[in-house]
Length: 461
Image 1 (cartoon, rainbow, N blue to C red):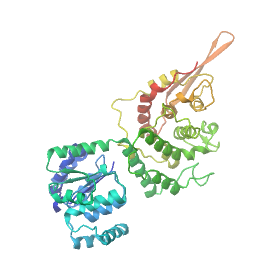
Image 2: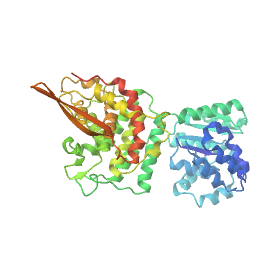
Image 3: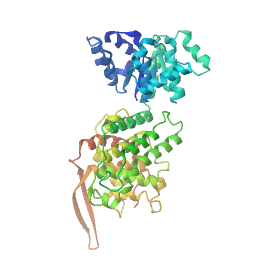
Image 4: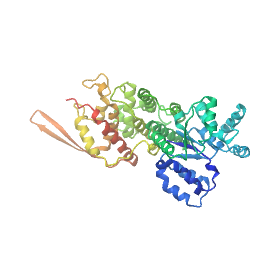
């Protein structure tokens, strides 16, 4: 979650004086508290040092110190929660100077405010003007814009909302300990919202793709059939993620997540299971099947409409996982860092071989199919008996199709039963050749599969 904080700190001129204004954030900024304390005792007085420190918070805080710079930040639309000061000084000479460096869009807005007569005339109107631009023009959710100010006792703040008959946002006083506690609880609630962290991680990754001019890799590049247009791919995702609001019901969330996954996995229609099972595209282009195959399965399950069952509900973490393997497949690029607030680091070592051995025995060893991935694929075929796709937890199968790629077969023993029968005994071990990206993604997949394994139906005898 990205946080925008617009406050001029009473025009403090040193970081020794500025740093204490961060105190109302409490434990929310504990990840950077040591560096903030160090900055407060240093001679580094330029505001940029405080801004850089705040951006390093687990949930980055972007501090801007006035009306024009705050408006410039708001125009970027890169924030999920916004904190305003009620009182932002309005100095016409300073504003004219700042406008010279402001973007064209920001200057357009300032001119528009003046023409409409809503440009703040006094400092107490400045935060109010920014608030209404956010709510009325950008459609930003009202519950994620708050005022944090030492001026909440001034009648002019609430009077302005009364004049427009508008519902005011939550206004927290910096000097009231109970209100500061409520402010911290509000921050905590939204920072833990998985949907917000998913959306922010995806948008930040799209920014990286554009900023670094990432290009697609084979078989998605221009040297192969049906190349991916990167600009169109990114713009399409931005359109889907344009809405700041959190879906209001579980039904809306599931519908939205299915649409996202449908869009993300569309490029994987090009594969066939025959060549993919051997790690290639059309037998000629090598691919990392540990990433491509789960995305391919998800594509098929959505296209064949088998995800619409009560055992296959998608969470924000599941959509994030799909996004991560899609970006890795298309661009050979890791975006794990963009989702560090969505996935918790396991508090104890994972027992991967134990989990996979259990699932292989109970769920993924049904004859006549010996290959685990073929068995997973067949679970999505509607007409196949005895499997009932309506009872299949396809999200669990998604993670299984990734994690079983961490194994390698190390021996095959053949046993005879009398003169008329024989059977195979296969031995597996954890592969030692996987890359750092795979190892980083493995605990995420393990944790979710461990949570979902109880949904897996037992193997058919």
